[in-house]
Image (cartoon, rainbow, N blue to C red; front, top):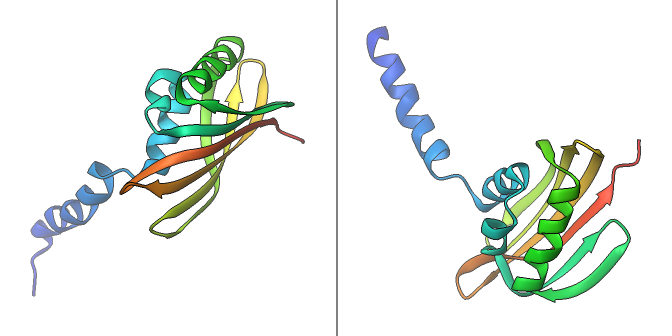
Length: 131
């Protein structure tokens, strides 16, 4: 029988992989919370479908970064929470975040797919949260 003094070590060993190996969904959430368009753009595919409120278009990585930079300057992120995630496929992820900013609440939908063995954002939609 294992002594209770070893229990914290065992628990820690189970938690370390999940803490250290944060997946792309959590990394994207953290970068949105930071309002860091530059680092976020590193996860974009060569072209990405971006919707910001009512403006939708397909942009290059650089153009998409500029669009998001403008959004983050106008809407300073305060907090973010994952509302829904579909990551049952190794080659496709879909996540809906709730973003709270200094100007209001937004629903952010992010679609990622595997391209050349890396998960990249192919679509990012930022829409006003309907209450």
